[in-house]
Amino acid sequence: METLLIYHSMMIGRVKSDFHRYLYDEIDWNDHLIGIVGPRGVGKTTLVLQHIKERLNRNTALYVTAEDLYFANHTMLSLAKELTDRGFTHLIIDEIHKYPEWSRELKLISDYHSELYVIFTGSSILDIRKGANDLSRRAVMYAMQGLSFREYLKMFHNIDVPVYSVEQIASHQADTGMVENPLPLFRQYLRTGYYPFSRERSFDRRLRGVITQTLEVDIPFFARMNASTGYKLKRLLTIISESAPFKPNFTKIATLLDVSRNVIADYVLMLEEAGMAMQLRDGTGGLRGLGKVEKVYLDNPNIIYNLSPTTAEIGNVRETFFLNQMRVRNNVVFSGIADFQIGDFTFEVGGRRKGQQQIEQASHGFIVKDDIEQPMLNIIPLWHFGLNY
Image 1 (cartoon, helix red, strand yellow):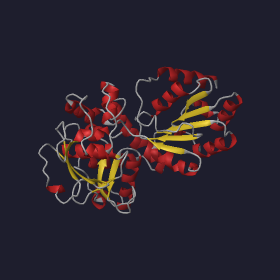
Image 2: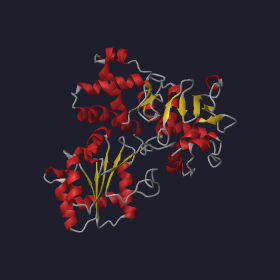
Image 3: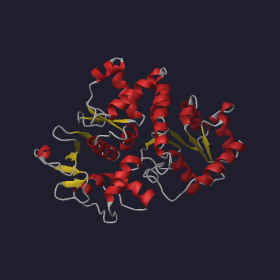
């Protein structure tokens, strides 16, 4: 226990408070059981450490990681009991999916020590959601993704731009005058700005490590797959990265990977849940996730450039950015006449020379252009859509 307290103090001492992720003020920290899930490397650990440092009594809160050797000989339930006996009020558990039977023990903690507030995080969305089904009546779950372009401007360049809704962006209400010469910053963001560790000199190597760990450890562990699965997932991710974008032909891909067609559909869904890919569906049923898959993208432009640093297709990068940024606040679906549909708005994404042909039949159609700084009529700069969260 004393070792855990020392580690807790060390981690709190290291965390900085000069920047907060978008989710920080959206979480209702008064709930007794909170789960924060998201891909590796998006800043979940920093988020909970900031909460402890800024809003909790450090003497009655404990941060632990489920990977700690302490849990080789102790259970989370026994730790919770010791904490309540000592008068602690909060237990924060990082990387909880690394702990066997974590969802069962969280339920027991919730039942036996209801006075203890518990916050848990997990990098593998797949395994977390699998266990979270058992906690649906107890835990309040939050999903977290990487930096928006707006957050990137604040975190790395101290440029503070407000959040704008899609309606405000479409009606040219985004006041971006404080962003001088935005296009070079936008280019940098597309290559290396999505993850909070973007400024590290070893960014490319670390991101490749995130990809490898997700494909070779997280997904196979969750799905109880053998070691060769990681290799097939890598090949599938490469296929997606080299497309502009990848239009699902699961039969063809299954032949290339020597697996069944249904397995490919499962693989793509796993990549999506783990934060490596996105699937753009049609609007069938009107609810997110129910429609037919029309296109498959990598999760964010940083992954595209990491996997294909010299051959990344710019059209793919543009569409990937738009979908990645707008999905947080909006239900983005496939448009039958253009690239994307958000409510009544139709968006066609392209470069400076993109014409109006695709949206001529749209009642509220917009051309989203890269390589421009300011909006005009129904033309909106691509980078403005990075200000949505």
